[in-house]
Amino acid sequence: MIDIVHSKSGSSVSIHPFGATIISYKSSGGENLFVSRLSKLDGSKAIRGGIPIVFPIFGPPPKDSGSTMPQHGFARNNMWKVKEGSQHDSDSHAGVTLTLDLADASKGRGGNNIWSESDAKTGATSCQLIFEVKVDNEALSTTMIVQNTGSDAFDFNCLLHTYYAVEGKAAQDPKQCYAKGLQGYSIIDKVRGVSGEICGEDPVDLTAGAVDSVYMAPEGKMAVNVEVGVGGGRTVKMEAFGTIDDKPVPASCVVWNPSAEGAAGMGDFGDDQYQEMICVEPGILGDQPALGPGKKASLTQLIFA
Ligand code: BG6
Image 1 (cartoon, rainbow, N blue to C red):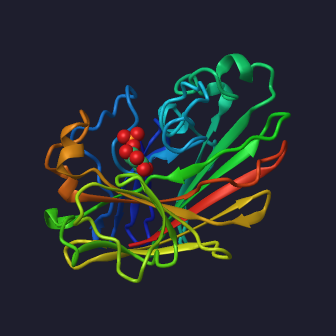
Image 2 (image 1 turned 180 degrees about the vertical axis):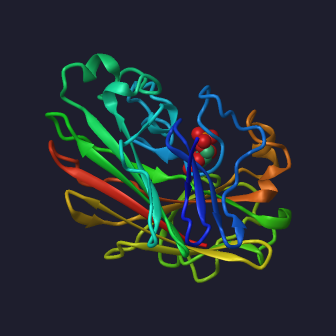
């Protein structure tokens, strides 16, 4: 485990090297992240909770692609390395940087896709992933950087799959648990199978049962800003923004909660724990410009808690 403490404020972060998954972020209000009590932490499965990194695909591979890459890609299924000398604790903040080279990603690439081991040997598709984590008295800052180290451009999606802890089992109480700030975003509702509705002024809550919706930014909107109600009278503010080849791209956001039924179907999630979490996941999703050789993309998420 990599433990980062900002001595000046007492805020701290714990990062599991498997997936570079942040599994704890404590600020003055206490723990902000949810981790399932049944989560595997032994590298046999992606960690169920905290902030798993989703790359290069979001969800399952495209239908009919023949790809056998597992859902949400390989970034969360491999051991990352701490960049030598990157761990620090100064007055302004504490932090660390982790990296994953495609060559070290032995799991989760599947077959029949540009990332599969047999295809990647040619060096056509290759990347280095860099994850910069910083914590100070007011926020946790996480930036994932995708560096194209191959000779071909590639398309990708990426996302920081943040599981917030909701105090008092209050996730289904709309007064206490919600995501506010997505008005005007176009909704892909994966539960109802409906796309294209526009999110209104009302906060998104979890009263409808299972919630699994992607919110795509309206024209011209780049950064996403969401207030998340996390129970116990507390809110956290999230801001996220991304770039491809140094040009801003719109940040989308996913809201997810499996409900009682979905929880019962997951081996690594307690039956009652859907009441203790809300996922609010910023990402670079949908059709975005391809990332050319030698170019980089970035996704930053700031959590003010
Ligand atoms: C969300 C997806 O981001 O992650 C959901 O929108 C998915 O469809 C959820 O169920 C959890 O995914 P996984 O692979 O960690 O079980």
